[in-house]
Amino acid sequence: MGNNVFGLKEKEAIILRDICFARMKVLHAGEIQNPEDLQIQRQFSESAARQAMIVFNFFCCAWSGNEEGVKRQAADQKNQGPHAGGGYYDGMIRDYKALMAERMWNGSYFEEDVLHLQSRLKEFIKAQKVPAPRTLYIADCHFYHRRLNTEMDQRGFSSAEEMNDHMIRQWNAKVRKNDTVYILGDLSLADGFQTSGILDCLNGKKHLIEGNHDEL
Image 1: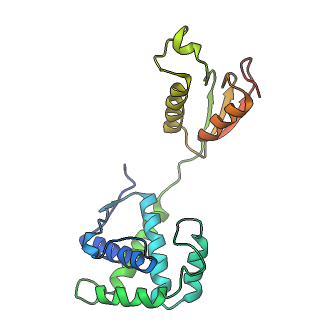
Image 2: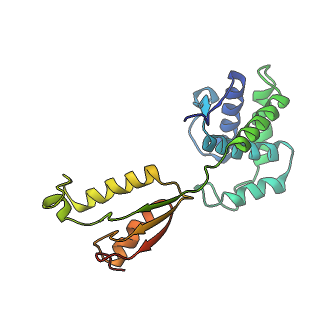
C-alpha cells in the first residue's frame, strides 16, 4: 500500500469491527452472529478508509436519531447491493442504537472514542493527494493482430485475444484514469465495434489518431 497506509490502533480496530457488525445485522447482510468473527484490516489504504467512512456516516446518522440522514445515506447507495429499496432504513435507528449500546458500554470504549476514530479517518482521507494527470503517447499497439504471434514478432500468445488481455493489463498497470493518452495510430486491426470494446477497457482519456490499420 506504499505510504498511503492508515494504521488502526487495537481499540480503533475493535470499534470499526463492532460498527461493521451492527450495520450487517441492521441490513441483514450476512450470517455472522458474533462480532469477534468479523475480521477487520489493521492497515487501511485511502480507498479502504473511504469505505470505512460510509459505515461511520450510517452510524452517526442512526446514533443521533437523524432519520432523514439515514434515508439520504440509503438513497446514495441504492445501486450498491441487494439490501437497497424502500425499506432499507426501516427500524435502522432503533436497531443501531440497541446493538451499539450493547457493545459500547462494556468498558472497551465509549462514544468519544468512536468519534475520535471518525475524525482520524477524515483527516487521513483529506491528507491523500491525487497524483497530477499526465500526458502520455503511444503507437502501434496492434490489438487483434494475429500474425504478430505466428509470423512476425512471434510474441508467444495462444491467440490474439490472449495477447489483447495481456496488453490491457500492462496498459492499466501504468496509465491512471486521469491521464491523457494520445494513440499515434495503429491501435487495432479489428473493426470499429471490437476496437471500441478495447478502448473501453483502457485507463485514461484517450485520443486516437487514425493509422493505416485502424478501421473506425
